[in-house]
Amino acid sequence: MKFTTLLLSGLAALTTAQTAAPYTDAKSGITFNAFIGSTGYFFGIALPANSTSSNTDFIATIGGKGTGWSGVSLGGGMLNKLLVVAWPNAQAIVSSFRKTANYGSPAVATGTFTQTPIANGTYVNATHWTYTFLCSKCILSDKTTFAPTDLTASFGYALNAAAPAQKTNPASSVAKHTSQGQVSLDLKKAQSASFESWRSWAVKSAVTVAVKREWEG
Ligand code: HEM
Image (cartoon, rainbow, N blue to C red; front, side, top):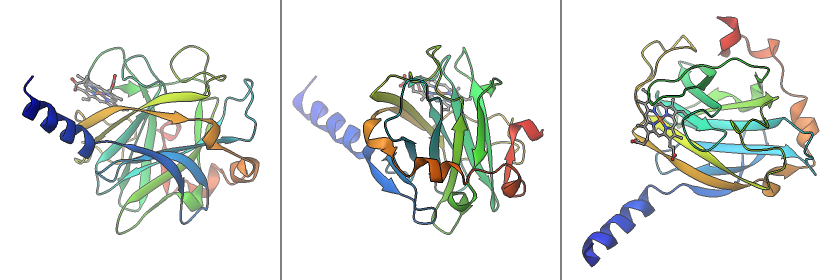
């Protein structure tokens, strides 16, 4: 490869890079270790202080700009990993777990894992949309997610600025991402002594209007 090509591809990598950093949501006050992309995509995670290997829960925030979808892979890659996909529908957020063994729109995944919205961290405003939720039984030991003992983990990000075909339907197919990749996050930096208090904000009934969840059909 010529030097100029190398330099150019280096620059391209830089401009699409996702930067890992602590991030506090302005409305909920929850602090995450997060990565924030140049497109407005972001994903953040918060864990209990001194999270032990028996912990299976975390709080996540995911969002973007406009009306397209944002997705995260809890295991890094796309295939055979637990994915979460979310997008805005007017003032509401629509989200579901997904999993697939093939490259294509992933089907809704079912299991014991659940996502319960945190209302004060779930909103659509003039600049972006944000979905904050308690992910319960989401840290699995079957290699579909990062492991309970991991101190750092690779998360996959994927997004498309185009809204899904049926944006009121959490099971809607989505078009292939226009940007995707993996970012490593330091899970120690995601731990917080406030986790249990933040967890108590996750209420299923509080946001049935704001968030349609996959188990509601
Ligand atoms: C029609 C829908 C989709 C298609 C056709 C598709 C296809 C692909 C393909 C072919 C790749 C390999 C890289 C490339 O060639 O671009 C890939 C990577 C990836 N996809 Fe998808 N995808 C779809 C939806 C999704 C969704 C909804 C997510 C949600 C999280 C996702 C997450 C990822 C991630 C994280 C990677 C990067 C994996 C890595 O770096 O190893 N994809 N996808």
